[in-house]
Length: 372
Image (cartoon, rainbow, N blue to C red; front, side, top):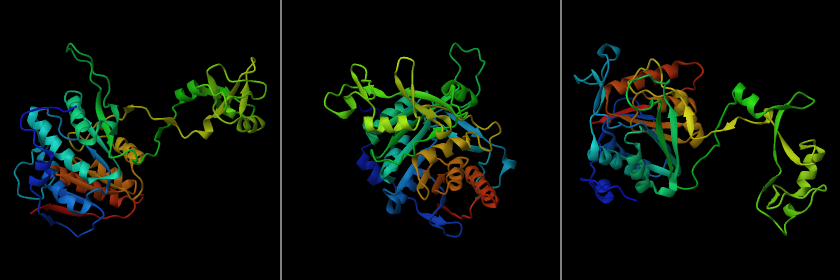
């Protein structure tokens, strides 16, 4: 499915006719980490030369087509140039078809930069997000879509509009291929989770629950369809594993037999790393942000742990407050951040310097680049 609108360019024209940025070095060179001050479209074109197919994870929180200027207090930061626009952190004034093409151009370059093991997470709101999904289906392929994640961003609202309260936004998760990095992320069990999910306790005081030993699908010839310990799987089902394994589990006391002689496997709380993450996340935005649209640091750490490894290269081309870069650095990933707002660049520099000065953080450095 393709989305059709005026001014939509061909991918060929976007890749070939977009002007590259000429980047000058503002600080000492360190190629592992880069903070780039400039327009991200031309910068992405420039990055293709050295980084095509090399980025394992992209997270972006682009403008949402809100037709809004996000203001800041001039006294909160110094500038890195002579611009007089320090009262605006950034402008989200591109709307309609222009916005869709603005985002599509950048997504095409981001696809080229992704490695074969790479993933992209795009943070957007409910008003424009479903149009963006169609564009991402077109660029990355519908089969590479994995999740539309609902992110709870704030406490419930009490307003008088004839609508439900809006406490969420959305994160679209795609990959370059089916071989994307995936570290099976989990969330910690809350006390309520423990009481609800692990209601039983054994003689040693270990909390556990039980799961069926059979699964859907009838097997007539294989070992998993045969009788074990005097019991056959229910009609239309088979044992989840070979009866020899079931026998070993039973000897180890890992199988619980009901009064009706039905076996179930014991699952112990202290052997679980947490509950499997679903597609609703609660990571509320900072109450006192340094930047108008600053995102939760733990949200970015969760994404980075899930879809990259230590040493992976992480990119955020709408770097904003720099949360992606701070999270990547704290988790021993390499990173590239791009933003065209002076206020943003200064906030990021401060946050990185604070992280560098933190005794718990490893030493690191980065180069600051800008369009010359």
